[in-house]
Length: 135
Image 1: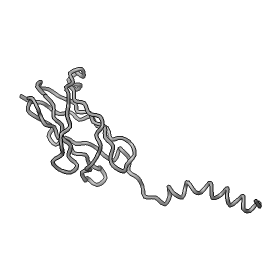
Image 2: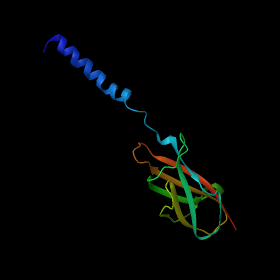
Image 3: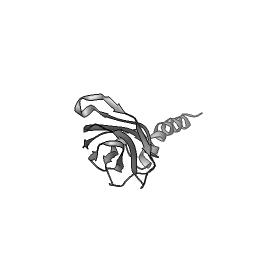
Image 4: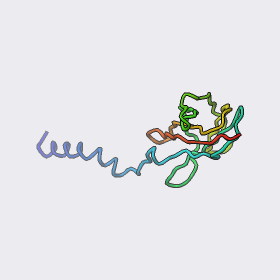
């Protein structure tokens, strides 16, 4: 291999990874998305449905088909994080809206914690949403 050929190989090796980053469109980050409560207040009872919307903060559009892999609801905002109840994900009724069912039999502030993957994006969207359960 000649010196010129070796230099071309070295330069191509150094520039190759950079060119992909410079020429590809900017990718979204998990921080570009957020869950939003559809209602900040619900009535206490068995089988209470809590709905959230996953939104792209840059465009305001709802994001369908996210994979929610962690969910928890507890009374952490009222100092009772140990007061957690089972939560079940339900089928969506509209794109970008995610529904959950839980027995919220105690009034007060409840925290819904979610972790999700948005299709085609890297990173995890994590949210802790506080809703009020009223009589």
